[in-house]
Every structure is written in C-alpha cells, then in structure tokens.
Image (cartoon, rainbow over all chains, first blue to last red; front, side, top):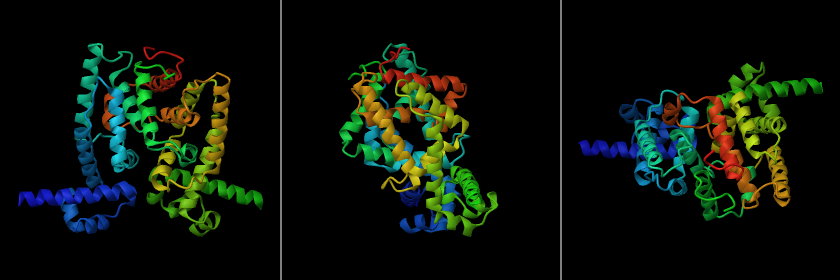
Length: 193
Length: 193
C-alpha cells in the first residue's frame, strides 16, 4: 500500500511539473494534471491540499533532484555554473519552474525546505573555502553564490529581440561565455580571455 | 477626438501594466483592467484585439519609456547596469513584465519593435566602441550586451530561500555588487575590489 501511495505521488508530481512548467500556477489546470496522471482532482487535493501546495511540492522535488545531480564544487564554481547550465538545457522545465515560483508565489516566507538546506550547505562550503584561501574573500558568501547561480541562467531568459541577433551562436559558445564570466569574477582569468 | 483616443489608450495601457505585472497573462482579468480604467471589455478588444496583443502593447510601451529614461552609455556599461537596477527598484513592474513576456509569449517571432530597434542601436554603439578601443574586443557585441543586461537583473529574482540569508543587505550594497561585477567583466577593476 505504501509503495502504491509513493508511486501515485510520483506520477502526480511528474504530471504537475509538466503542466506548471508550461502554464505557470494561474494558467495550470488541475483537471489536465489529473488526466495526464490517470488520477482525479479529488485525489490531487487529498494528497497536496491546493494547486499552490502542489506547485511547492513540484519545486521541492526538482530542487532536490537538481541539487543531487549537480552538487556545488567550491574549488570550481565556474564549472558548477556550467553544469547547472547543462542541467537546464537537458530539462528546460527547471528554469521555467524557478521563474514561475518567483513570480507567482509570495516572496515570504521561504517555503522550500530542500532549497533552504541546500543553500545553507553551499554557503558553509563557500565560507570554509574563503577561510582556506581557495576563494576570494572580497565577496560576501551569499553575494558570491547569487552571482554564480545568476550566471548559470545567463541564456535562459534572453529576449527574443536579442536572441534574433544571436542566431548563429552554438550551445558550446553560450556555455563558454557564462563559465568564463564566472572565472573572470573570481579572478581566475582576465577578461581579455 | 484624436486626443481623446490617445488618452483612452494611455489609461488602458496603464491599468493593463498593473494587472499584467501582478498576475501575468494567464492570470490577468480583462474585466479588472476595464474596471480600473473606467472602460469596458468591448472597448479594450476594439483597441488591442486580444489580451495577448494588449500585453505586447504594454511591453512596447514600457520598453520605450525605459530605453528613453535609461539610455545605454557604452563608455560606462557598469553605470548603465546600475541605472537599469535603479529603474527596476523605482518601478518593479518592469522586471516582472519582462519575465512574464519570456514565460508566456512564444519565443519566436520577436514582436516588440521598440526593443528590436533599441537593441540594434545598442549593438551598433558597442561595435563602434570596440573598434575605437573603448571596450574589450574579446566579447562578441551581443554577448557583452546580454551580460550587462543580465547583470542588471542580479537581485530581481533571488530565491526567497537565499534572500533569507541576505536579510541585512542594503540597496546600495546590492547595487555596488552588480556594478562592480560588470566592471570586473570589462577589466576595469580586479575582483579583489
């Protein structure tokens, strides 16, 4: 029975991730999620309580899987940004869900325990690396983490009007631009390349 | 008559900007926009054709006003990023509308003529400054513009879970972090500050 419940929950989360990624919270239809997961609306509300809480469950799930697949490497923050970029390329739902989360859920309180835990752990590692001299201490740890995470999204939300000027840019080139930018910010290379 | 029509259009755009900023396109209600602008749904559809085209009109309007108020300064791209940051702080609808645009409107074709014109003009200025030696030529112009624009959004979409670790950060500090990051990327200062 427990295994059945876990499998059902998994199926609902997967279908909800697709629906929310495409349409956001306001645009998502719980009946479409029910149909895609061979479930029904009553079951979804029983499991998650509301459309908003279902969205938070999807976010917690995707944060957990992304943090597991792409752990921070404080001795190579540029590589970390590059691997996050790879993860978004592989699953474009990740950056879209992240952005819906910021637009459609209240800014406070923070409610993704998986993300809070991940960030606290990352800040602890950055602090330790700064004390050991492996990372420049000119940055506050949270500022540095924000710079690296933000840089991983460099190509995610480019305006179509700028994208039109970038038509011939390869994925490898785009990856190199963001990885090199992080290396420049860390003083590992000079901007002249 | 023409002046009346302009005034009506202005009132509709202003009310729509508030509604779209808050709720996005899927979440926006045309009847709320009508009520807020002392108009009616028939008039809105007569002027703009659809909710999506009304959104595009709002975007074109906000791009035009932002580009006019904050012109690019190719001899001071870091300052340009800082002034964009100031514009977003003054009117938080700007970054929210930009993000809804990317999430809810198709990636192609580019349809904001005001933004296409602005970007083409900016790329021309960057190219000229690179030829004159005022900007590092290691960057492709569109890559450099994207880096600067992206950096202006450094603090706009910070996760609440990271924000909680930044609670005591002042606006001046946040501004300095993004301005200095652009200066580092341009080789104007070293990351050590």
